[in-house]
Structures are given as structure tokens and as C-alpha cells.
Length: 363
Image (cartoon, rainbow, N blue to C red; front, side, top):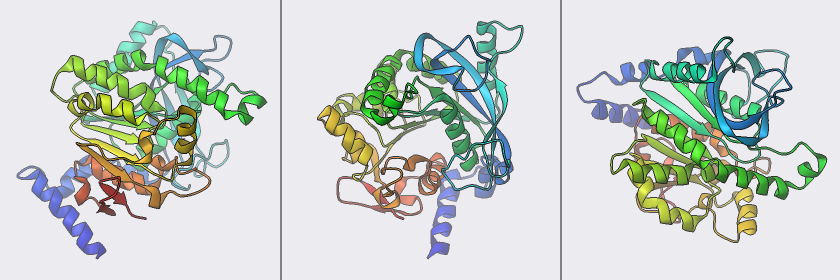
């Protein structure tokens, strides 16, 4: 049965590629073989977080804070990604590099360069990358700067993605107080305001990314949809009917279902395909629905033109609250196939559904 599945997958590649490169040549081109052992991964970032001028300039939580300012800053961080770890986990420390994520280089400020010059160099590296695709990743609620960087590095490594990964990190995270730790509702409300106030910043960033003519895979998680969806909708109305995104991938979106319906037409015009990973067992979104008194997009509902994939069977753990599945092995396996351009019905471990979703991802 497994042989048939992989045979069908290979046949799909051949039919899709036509007279172009063979399936093996195509896969070779878009798979980074270095990511089979512990390796350094460079994560490009753009952020609207405020910085602490009283501390060392670095890829750190002490420099990039959990609240915002009126400007943005771009840079990159070189991260050691260990091969010997559980998929989706982010073990961090100064011990064994084979088992721990570590920051290797902090490419935040270039000596002798103004902010504007540094910005131009940042975009030049994106534009001159020989791989034609780029992943733009936007994280969710209560994620500090370091965690956002490590997660982006993990995604790039585990997807064996050969192109650039550009993280947009908005001012999320707690205030560091004991009270904030125990009363997450306060942190949630602050993060929500921060996310919504980051929309213009993200829209400008995405608009500039579109101008690179890269094929953009926009990958979003949780409250990050508060940053992204309205921005994409506005940009779509400015752009016209031509899609400027290759893939728009929504993971556990903490976003009002009714508001999504209102902007759906413009979102459909923005992207060649929209995929929504959702779960009716998402406890974090259940709590969000109680706060907002409205349905949340990530709890699963069908929408015309959107591939809605129910992932509840693959993430029902108490630890993740059914909300952290986007970095897990089953989702990464599906994302890899999705970025290849395969339709949902052709991807491994997906079956059709006649419930509140189009498809179910099997465990």
C-alpha cells in the first residue's frame, strides 16, 4: 500500500513536470542535503519590535523586546540546528550541538553601515538568492524574539528548504512578570493589540517582498493571522486580480470566522492556493472563542475556494493544547508536498471528508 502511495506521488510529479526536468531532478533542486546532519541555518528577519539600546546588539530577547515601536529593523541570525532531537521541539542550550539549538552569529548591525544601507543589502541577498521561492513565516501569540528565530530555523531545516526563510516577528510575548505568567489573559489582550497594530508594518514588508518576484509561500500561525489576513486583503485590493502569493498557509488561525468571510474574496485573489489547517479539538482557540464570544477560524469550517484540512487526529496532546501542530512531523510532511504544488487529494495521508472540512490528515 505504501509503495502504491509513493508510486502515485512520483507519477503526479511526472505528469506535472511534463517535458521539463525529471521528478528526481526537480526534487534534487529543491532539497537541501546539508539538512540531514547538524547544521547552521540562517534566518532572515524583519521586525517591528522595540530594541533595548542599553544592551548588546544581538539576536536576543534582551535586545529585541516584547513591545513595539514605530519603525522596523531587518537582519539575520545564524542558528545551529541539531539533528538529534524530537521533530517540533526546540531544545536550547550551550551543551552538545548535536542535541541543542544555539545562536552562532548575530547579523543584526553591520559596522560602518547606516540602517538604510543595511536594509538594501538585506533585500539584495533575498533578491539574488538563486532559488526562486521564499518562505515568509509569521508566528503567533506569546512568542518572544529568540523562540521566533529558532522556530523559523527549525521549519527551514526540517523542510530541507533550499531558499531563504524570512521571518516577520511582531511584538509578541509576555511582560516577564510573575503576574503575567499566571494571568495569560492579560498577555493575550496585549498581544492582540500589538498584532493588530503591526498590520501596516507587515503590509509594507510583504509589498516589498512581492517586488522581488520570488514565489512566496506565506506561512502563518495562531494570532499571527491578526497581523497577516487584513494586510493581505488590503494589498490584494491594491494589486488587482493577479495573485502575488504562491501559497497562503493558515495554521490554527486565531481569527474571527465572520471577519474571514468578509475578506475571503480578496484573499482568494491574493494567492494561487489557500490551505487552512484546523482542529475542532484546539483548546487554545476554544479559550479565545470564550474571550471574543465569536467562532474562531481554526476550529474548522468549510469555505469556498479554500482547502480546509482537519488535523485533530494528529495533535490531540494535552501539552500542545491541540494548537501547536504546525511544526510537527505530519504537518511538515504535508507542507513539503504542498510546496511542491501537489493538490490535497494527491498528498500522502490525506483523505476526503464530508464534515466541516474538505480533508482530514490521518495519523
